[in-house]
Image (tube, helix red, strand yellow):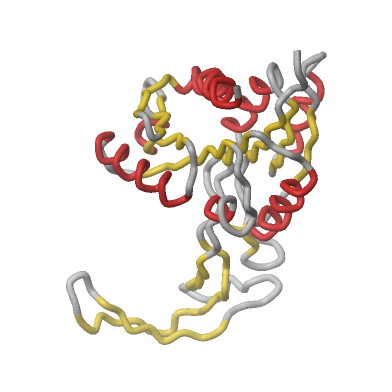
Length: 243
């Protein structure tokens, strides 16, 4: 048998600091990445970039004599944007799986709302009068505050461009409030836009449903899988592609 393939998996979610004691994030825990890493260790050497150190410790404890495991940690979008190209330079990964839930925006200021009013439009347009409220710990004295968010770069889009990665690339996408046929169309367009070979797509309703599921979509078609079967299905997909 030849050497194990090497795969990179990101897991968890980014945290973007609002002030020195608060952050914004999302609801996702990194379980998908953890389950995928555990399954991939049966067939590959895994590098796991995670926001959850306890999950890495769990993998180290249970992996036994499977493939090797290397871990590194991130908290913010900026951390992950710095780590990814570093690891792509260090290792010749045959597969990358971007399961991490990465913030689309980072805080760019906190403001007390002094006045706001509708000025026009349908949907309505607003005129706000704001006062800077940014501090190391934002005061709770104001009745209302607003946070400005600045859009972050799309990390998944940099693999094929800035980072010149040419191996198997798996993107993950979540939508809310759309039917599954529309999800499949949105996901396929998203996959092509990023240059990904395959995308795992679901809706929040699918995640929270009685029978959680996801779609695995590539250029050849789409397969709906039970959430519990997703790590095994991706492992099989990777094996077929990497051969």
